[in-house]
Structure formats: C-alpha cells, structure tokens
Length: 527
Image (cartoon, rainbow, N blue to C red; front, side, top):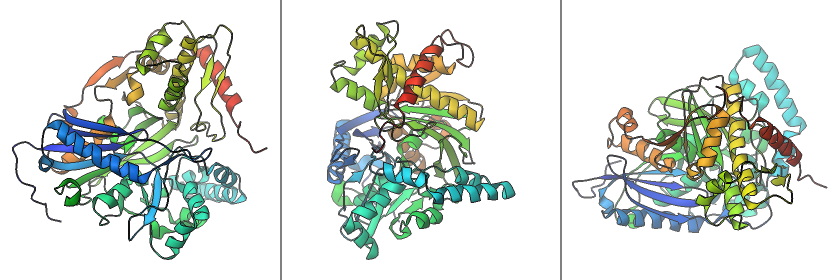
C-alpha cells in the first residue's frame, strides 16, 4: 500500500484516540510526547433493560470524528501534519453489522452487560464443562502442556464476549439470518472503527483486542475453533487478527480531507501498559478508570490461572510477543460516579479531603459490585452494598468506605497476582482518572507495602497507542527514546507497614470488609 501524499510541512505529529467506557479522547502528540491539542466527548451508556448496558454505534462514530477534528483544531495545526493515527479502545464491547452496508444490526453490547449471566452460570455448572475439565486435566497430567491445564480450569465470565454473542445469535433473528447468508461481520469497537474509517476495506483487529474477547486461543494465537464449535459460534464472522503495529490501512479522504495511515490498534489496558513503558517481565500497571485493571508482564509465556486471572496478549510487534496476566474489578469509577449522583459529594476532587477528615469509616464497609465480583471471587450475582451503617455515620464516613473499597480490591488483585504468577515485581505504575485520588493511592501503597508510582500522564491508553504508531512510522526511533519521555507525577511510599504490608493497621478493617464481601455474594439468585 503506497503512502498518500498529504503535502509536506516542517513539523509532524502523532494522532491518537482512546475510545473508553465513559468518554472518547483524542490527543495530538509532538516529538516530546507533549500534548499539543486535545478534545474529548462523553460516551452515554444505554440501559434498555435491567442488566443490559449498551452504546449507540452512530453516536460513537460521530463522537470519534468530532474529537479528532477538534483536537487537531485545538493544536492549531492541519490534518495533513498527522504522520500516523493510533487507536486504543475499550475491550470486549462488540456489535455485529451488515458486511455490504456497514449498518449495525444492534447497539454495542458492552463489557459491563449482564444479559448472559444465566447462560454463563448454566454453562459453568453443566456436565459438558465438567467433562471438559476432567478430560483436559487428565491430558495435562499425561503431557504437562500448560494449555491443557488452562482448559481444565476455564470458567466462563460475562465480561468475555462469548456468551453475550451466543445470546445475540439466539435472540436477534436478523443476525442469525445474516450469518446464514454470509453477510455478517462481528467486531469489537476497534474493528468497527477500522471498517468505518476505511469505508469497508479493512475488517481486522489486533492480537491485544482479540485476546480479551474470551473467544481467542492465546496459546495457538488464533480464534478458538474448539470453543466456537462447542457453543456454536460461526468462525466466518470474525475479523482477521494482525500485529499491533500493523499498517491497518488509511482513513478515507472523505472523512478528514486527507488519508492518514492507521498504524496501531490496541486494547486500552495493553495500550496503557505500553504507555507506562512496562516492557520487562515483572512490571505491573494498574489502571483505575471505570473499572480497575491490574496487569503484570509475564514475558513470552501466557499465565495459567487458578483464580480467574486472565492471560492476554500485551502486544505483538514484529516478532516480539508479550503476554500479560490480568485481574480486574469492574466498578471503580462507577462507584464514585454513583456516589456523586446520590449527592454524597459535589466535586470528585473533594473526596480525598472528605476521607481524610475522619479517622476511619465508622465501621462502614462498601462492596463495589454493581457488575458482580471478578477475580479472585468470580461471582456475577454479587450485589453492591453498604454494611455497618449507624446513626453516627456521616457522608464523610460513606465516602471513605467507598474509597477504601477500591484500595481493598487493589490489594485483593495484587495478592492474587503475587500468589499465582510467582514473578518478582519490579515496578508498579498507576494511571487512569481515579489515580488522581491521593487517599486511594496512599492506601494502596500502604496495603501493598511497596512504593507506587503515579504517572504524569493520566490517560496512558492514548499515549501507548501513540507510541506504537509513532515507532511504526519512525517518528520515535527506539523504545529507549520513548522511555526517556516517561515521567512520574508522584511516588507514594508505604507508611507504617512491614515489607509485605502485613502489619498494616488496616488488617482488621480489611477483614471486616472481606466479611461484607462474602455476604454480598450470590445475592441475585433466581427465586
């Protein structure tokens, strides 16, 4: 594919867009990774039924185009000065569309959606799954292949696309009909944007996005024929999987007036990992946004988990293949936003001060599980709850309990990661909007018993996608050059705890919270 001639100018830039759960952000980066222009717009989720969480594809597309144009305008430069475009997106949010017209058959079904919870529960308890676990466990003992151990431990989750797609094929007749006619495309947000940006030329994704769907075999590095056969998913609808730094095509000139090469497509958490320069085994990245995602670099081997950590491809760039082990908590920013809507506070920036204004939470525990509980408990039927409320409880106590719960979930995920991977942790870097809360950051460092570094750039997904795109076109020459552009905003050191956080005065409070957690589990059972 030849490079279009967009004209020549003295200075060039990298354009990067992050399509998140609550917003779409676009930044224009210069050689020093300084943001020269930016724009953002809100993403409004739709809740058509209880447990259903959707996004309007048309609104998402219009928002994407708008932030790109506004960011370039904000930078005071021209579209032809954009050397490359990088895209990072929320993962495991998908739609299906007509291959000929590009018109979606339904709204995006997001990673927070719970419509397939009963299907997931039914399959996890089925004789089929018991048989698969038994056979693969036996084969593992005979062969010692880690892939078979992974299969013997597999537990389906609503956060993976698998059964939400099964649900779509079962209940949306037009999708099933399009599949039968060979006219159906499936795609996560990145795939759909690529299809739209190239006007139907490109139906593709990258390994980082594919590996987060739950349908991709991270050991064989392809869509899982076995899983698709097991749950009756048609392989024909899936996009081609490419390297993270693949040249995915060019934006159609009718969209931005020029053709811009699309040089990186990344899942948001993996993009943040790359933006944090967590390139070495043992590097940990924590992103606290709508949810919390904790990733550790495991190198060239996928991690086989016993407790629900998920092996994902971090990136595949050239011949380099990097895996991550990931755990997540779905409701982080969600819980804070919910509390704000209840008027527990007016400004998010006040929450840290409110939490510090009281010595403790007055025995109140908050369980942040609006979307169930993820690793290591893995209970989609858990409820969110306050426990231990008293007449003496104030708004400040409630806010402190909410912020504590976020740090407690961080501790839970971190302990699970340490226990399961046995990888020495080299550094811990934190980003995402919620990381600006000093109370959560300090408590996380205290509970970990380790220093935790908060980055100057809060929105690392955009930066990571920009780095990959820029390296791909030679804008930045090496990763060493990129590392020099990384800087910390603050480093939080543990206070008054031992080397592993075990002697924390928070130990009894954490134990009370874990008791509340157990009481919230399996709440939403069928009568």
